[in-house]
Amino acid sequence: MGALTLAADDGYVSKGSMDGGIGEYMLLGHVREFMPGSEIPIALVRQAVKEFLSSGGQVPTCIEWQEEEF
Image (tube, rainbow, N blue to C red):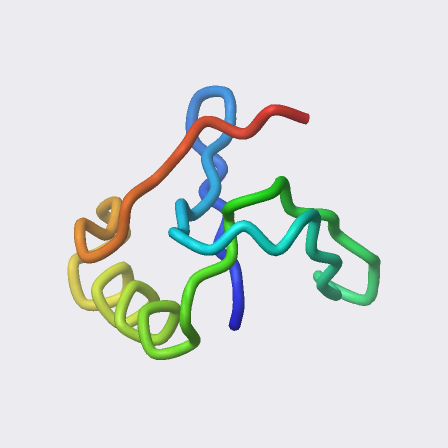
């Protein structure tokens, strides 16, 4: 499992179908909390990162996004 964040406008995070509560991940050496429902399977994280890089920085469409609440 993993989660993605997109720093655009107000900020967006990946939208998952699993509600495992708030997840904590390390981001550049700091703990980063993700809102409930933002975890997605690691295969989708990889696919979205590949899409982001191969498209020149366009928002990946292979996953759903939700507006970040914090």
